Image (cartoon, rainbow, N blue to C red; front, side, top):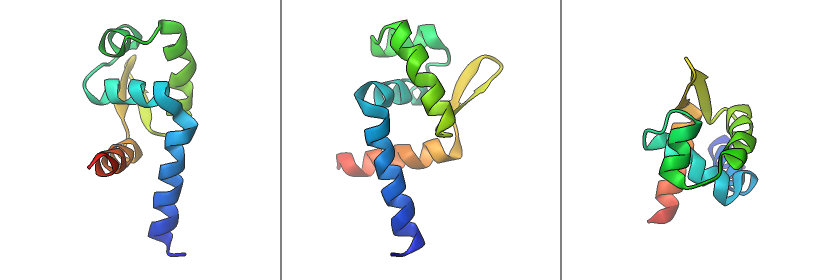
Length: 88
């Protein structure tokens, strides 16, 4: 199996690790939510669920926290592109 195919499969598996809530939180950050409160406003997800999923997103290197604000990483951008390709 070529490296690119393996990489895509691993990123594909991230969807299942994150689940619906994790992906919704991820998209909220991508759309500009920078902290727990704005993620809640963008997504409607309770703070307790957000606080449980953020460490997973950080641990998977999809987002990073800078100056108390969340941003997508390069890996997060690739993951976003993968999700968008699947939606088409």
